Length: 435
Image (cartoon, rainbow, N blue to C red; front, side):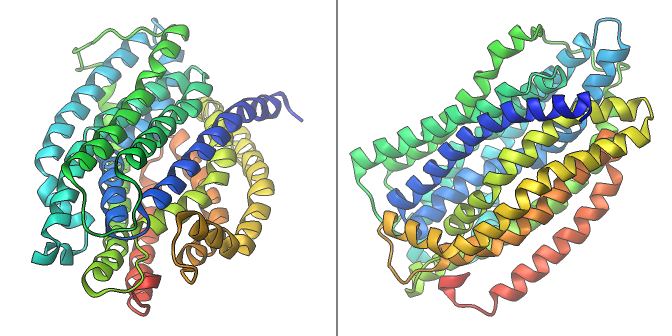
């Protein structure tokens, strides 16, 4: 085993431990949502309002922050006389300004965003109260865009300095806050599986509590940045210092994100359509909350194994690409792929086999009808995708490390067209309880 492989496994193991705890607490949070809010329209209203800000953050700045910054930060750390300190401060300053302006605009645009996130039938007079709850919750959750961006922006600076642990461990704080909020909700309001909308007090607790969790997650990284030798000093001299190159690389990534988020909102509308139809016409709801819960289960192995390995590998891949050592880079990508697939493939098979059992377990914990198999079926459907998503994720990072953001865009166009086409076609053949 090479020294780089040993270092990769060591760094990945530490991140994996943090990710295990993070995903475990995230799973507990998702399970609590099912127990506290059920799977009816109320659950989808909260899930949609709390999920859309993350999708919009990715659309606003996530592509640049997530996939372009680390190679650029490493390049300036290697080439600039100050070790990239001034460049990093300019990036943070500009990033926080963009996030602040975008967050304000998105709060103002919540009524329009509602049309993207929710099925059109929520605008029927019978669901006026539910629609008002959804708009209020989305406004209260929208500041998460700023804090998501700050978290990833600061985390990428730590990753470029090969301090991987904090970004993997910090989300635990968000999950703990979210679980505490749901616990307070039970104490104050009890549990239900309702589609009647929320009271003003319930909206404030769920919305502000969810946003507070993301804020805590971002603030936790600040002392780790200082320990890594980085002190933020705002810099507004953006011209002529290389930021234009970073933004040009981010342009194709922005196109990538737009295509990806179109697919997200289409699936979101289809999923919420199930619970809206159930609220209007009766029937067994199986919408966005069920989809998100099953997706979370499928992402636990990905987050623990794939993200840990790839995050540790990115700085090395970026250095090899910067030095044009293509054979060595190819070997590192292949080695990383072997490591993750050896672990992911058996887990995918196990989840496919145990999907219905997991669904039955969650049905019983949440007090849902015993004949509701929607969770189990959705978990099983996600299982094969775990393997393909792992390969896709790793290969994209290889392109990004070599500063190729154009090729991933065209790949994503194909994937999104297939995703949208199959989602629309297949959901049209099933009843409300299986959408």
